Structure formats: structure tokens, C-alpha cells
Image (cartoon, rainbow, N blue to C red; front, side, top):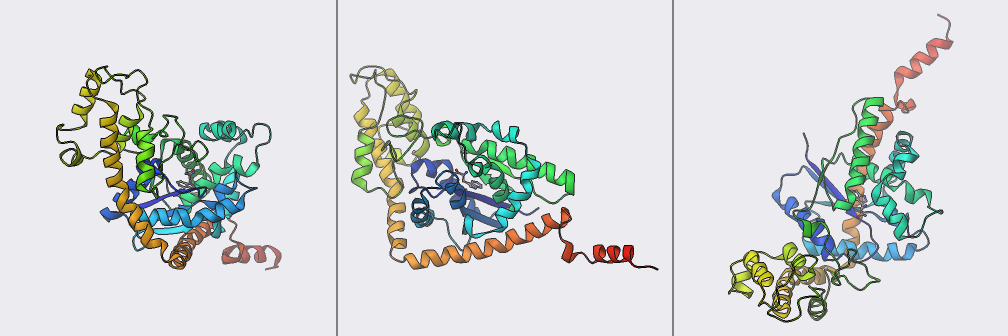
Length: 362
Ligand code: TRP
């Protein structure tokens, strides 16, 4: 069977370190294994509009930011097709037909949609487009016959919904769509990296994100103001790792080689944690280490981004090409879907022959 990876992001802002450990880093690794027959990375602008309908300029401006972040992280257009969702009308058509296979009550049970409705205070005035975006996401995934979808935990309900649509479609209309598998981040810290203030959600308005394009001084400032253990007051006090943002970030970012480089008096992260819990290790020292780690991780990304920023027209050209290539694949799937649903009248000579036999005297 072909191996196809697909994933994407809503272009509502620059990408941050949460995106990086949650999915981006993994995408690039998978891309570079060469294991996949095809890789599609989607800038999900149409989905972003489902809850930003009144702010299209925000979405428009952030397409290039997300594309630059992708390239900066090492997504390579020679190996991964980067596309813009709204420019592929086939996705809307697929969504429209899938809508017949999903109930309103099923959509109401989607936990991610539920919490987004609360967060956005939609309550009684939920836009239909927003409410149905899990169906559109099923179209995104199935249009490219994706087998592997690397995403964060919050996307699990979307993958469940997609699988249900695939099963329902195939059982009603015959084997047509491919069932995708979710690929979750490698550990709990990567699954839900908190903001620098320890809050679960990283958001621009809270000022608690570290962006991939952040300058070194900013990174440092954010690391040194990070939330730790509020009861760890004196260095001798035993410290707690639970909800300690600095250690959560180390879980997500630390590599073994950073110890000899930046903190040679410890063998590994377990030793550092044990010392902190025992008491006698100050927050400043751990923050200094984390700052070194983050600087080492983000510097090459920032530098690559600056190179790509020098030729913006080339980035748009790359997007145009990727979108064109992706549309061809989506069009093929749509053709299969319409044939399975028997809405391919003009391609069906048998249908025309039968109908004319019905009305022609023999
Ligand atoms: N829902 C995803 C997010 O909020 C973005 C997305 C849209 C996506 N279509 C997708 C992710 C298809 C994976 C596969 O980040």
C-alpha cells in the first residue's frame, strides 16, 4: 500500500515552539526518512476562516508566515508538497457529499469543537461552517488518500470523525476512501507544551508563546521569566517537577548531547531532575540551561527563515506549484467518489445506453 503523510496548520499567526514539538519536527524527520510515497502539508486557510470570517486579512497575511516557518524547519518542497487549502475547490465538493454521512448530534459530541465553542464564546450563535469543520477536515485527509496524519492530541476527534466517514462511505458506496492513522507526539510534554507562564494554552494575546522566528534576546527574556515551582523559594528547598514549565520544556527539547555542551556536571535530564527534587538546585541554573538548549534549537531555524525571507515571490511560486500538484490528486479522488456515488452521469455510457433502451421501442 502507498504511504502518504498529510497534515496542516491554520494560518492565524506565526508558528511557535508548541507547533514545533507537537508536529513540525516529526514531519521533517518523517520527510527525511524517504519512507513516504507522497507528503502533503496544508495551509488550512479555509478552516481558519471558519472562526475568523470577519478577519480575512489576518488569514491572508499569515499564509506566507506559515510557509516561511515550514521552510525554516526543513520542510523541503522537493519532498513535501505544500498547498493552500482554499485553492482546491475539490475539497469543498467532497465535504458537501460527506455531510450526508454525519449527524448533527455526532458533530455536537466532538470534544475539540465543544471546547473551541466555549473559548470563542460562540454558544448560541455557532457558525455552520465552524460547526462542520471536522467534516471538511475529513475531506482534507481523504482527498489525498493520507495513511499517516501527524498531529497533536487535540486533533484526535478529527481523526476519529474522518475514520467514521471513511467507513460509512465505503460501506454505503463501495471501497473508495483510505483510512488514516493518527501519529501523536512522542511524549506528554510535546503533546501539550504549555505557555511560558505555565498556562495550558499558548496564545498571542497572553504573550506566552515563543515563536520559531523569535530573536535570541526575546527567547532569553521569556525563558528567564518562565513559571516554575512557586514553593521552591530557596535553593536548598526541594523542588517539584509537576507543572514546572522549565522542566516540561526540557522534556520537549533536551537532547543528550546538550549535557556535555552546556551542563557537563550532569549526565542527563533524570539526574538534573533528581537534584531539583532533592533540593540544592536553583531555578536560575536550570533556566540558563534551558535557554542554551532553546537557543541551539532555534538558531538554525531562524537563520534559514531569514534566507527564505529574501525571496518572497519564490515562496509564493513554490506554494502555487504545490497547490497545483495537490489539486490533481484531489481531483482524482473526487472522480472516484462521484463514480462510487453514481453522480458521474456524463462519464457513464452504460447509463445513457440503458435510459435510451427504456424509451426506444425494440
Ligand atoms: N485542524 C488543524 C489545526 O487546527 C489544521 C488542519 C486542517 C489539519 N486540515 C487538516 C491537520 C488536515 C491535519 C490534517 O491545526
